[in-house]
Length: 302
Image (cartoon, rainbow, N blue to C red; front, side, top):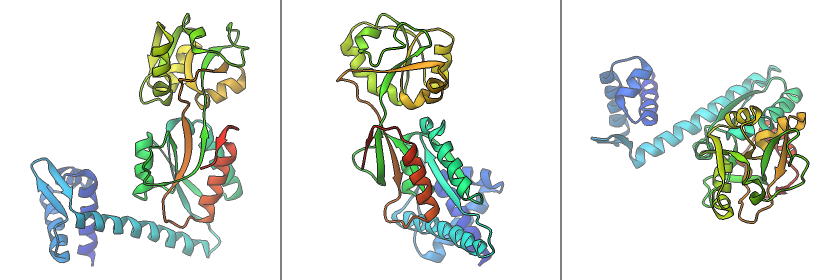
């Protein structure tokens, strides 16, 4: 049994890395030991788990099935441990959240804080990535809740709630446009703009509208929100971002956010997603509700 468990553990490592050598380095053992254990597992199951090519190892259909069962078994084992521990009055449930960066500034942390106020024994594992990695984490079962931007049409997950988050001009206090309720992109073109770069959601949303609006001046650009806000703070110029990017700075009065009123701008949508066909725990549902209540007022129910 111990040999079987070791073979399973080595198989998982190889499956995630796609290489016996990489798995061996992570496990701090010889590659031959990893290869031998995986071969023993294949012999015991009577199927090939990997296609071995010059480009590396790729899971076969049987390997995908085995990996899926293992991931479900690990989740159920964790839930079993939580349930047993809860019998002694100690709640140690872990909620795994995968989110895009913009929701990690305030939205997710505030919802997590509310959850832990109600249930102090809950642990939250917060992983930050792009929308593709969030959806992958939900689909493969490594996250219980996801927060993603601009969901694709063919979803491997279930969308629970979606809200539209407007693109706007971000300026320092005292800027000539700071008191405007809205602004057209054409009115901003005389300014030395600080523009977002990929993978920031605002970049794709404004690209077409900028090209249609006419010549514009770029003072600086960045692929991180913290870089853009620092440039605005230094007086380089106003920026184009989504509302959640600068919620804290707008609330403190440091920046003003003026929504852009242009039909060509595709305002991003932020969504709460969860796995399909999985019974959620009460704790997960509490966190989902806390997230939903903190989403801005312009909402689209999924």
